[in-house]
Length: 366
Ligand SMILES: *Cc1c(COP(=O)(O)O)cnc(C)c1O
Image (cartoon, rainbow, N blue to C red; front, side, top):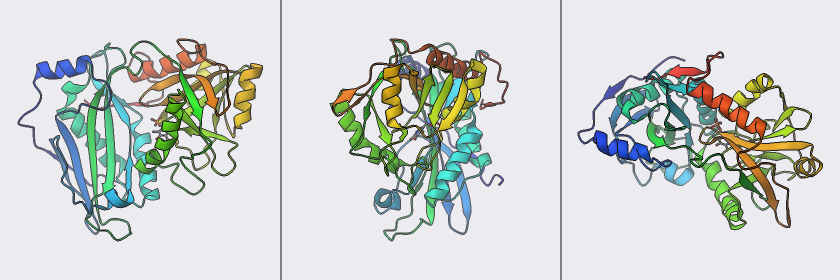
């Protein structure tokens, strides 16, 4: 596939002042402040992709009949732009995100955007808003990038939309753990599934998140931060969290993660950790993992560390797993286990240009 889009730029007439921007960057939080611009492009049946624009950030005009609002024909991606010490701006494995979005689009019957146009849109936005990428050495800060695509056609009939909008927005993100790595406790959901066989679990789509929220609320009621979902058919095998993949370090030096079954989202962080594992002396192992292996493995000492991973939090140590009527002992002290910390640091060092990028994972954006 080749590029179909070119992006014209209309600069904001009211960008945030440098002083205001610096005030936001001093304490950005997550996902609540956005840069001065956004990217939009339109696909129409018969014409393909056109009207690529970088334009002032602001509300999109869509009809109340836009299909996405009724039938959730939507996909998204999550990436980050990192500032390196020499001031340049980079992102991590964008080809993986482009390929995953193409797979998500196929599942949701949306038009595929080429890797060139996907990365082109991100580059166009970051070029204009590069002052929003936090300074190097600001403590794991980055500019979070959110590409997404949705059915914007005003039509209530049920079929794939004939008009679709692609957009990229960007939001400065602070360190996920400003006070140092803190283990999260996880709730084992027995009442709810996020995905099932033949469903959309392997696609990054808003609907999966909507269906994870009731389980998330149940977890919060039980004092947990996140929810673990099991396979919906047998309630036996560990799948993942609402938005993160899971890993287990074993006493005999294996790094285990549930094999992709079609209902698990293939995280870019997950794939990268599997590739890095041998460098850290761990043997990667993708296989089906029963929930009993977790609870019994923690009790017997077979499992020494558990962590979750994804672009937003990178690697998060997991403390206890709790369920109706019980819990495991914690598998993480205050800063997380040794391998959890080493894997996390190895990824961050590549992302921030501290370690040499021997695998060609980084792409320069500005
Ligand atoms: C996005 C996502 C992940 C993590 O993927 P990364 O590419 O590592 O950010 C894991 N699980 C789900 C359900 C997700 O939506």
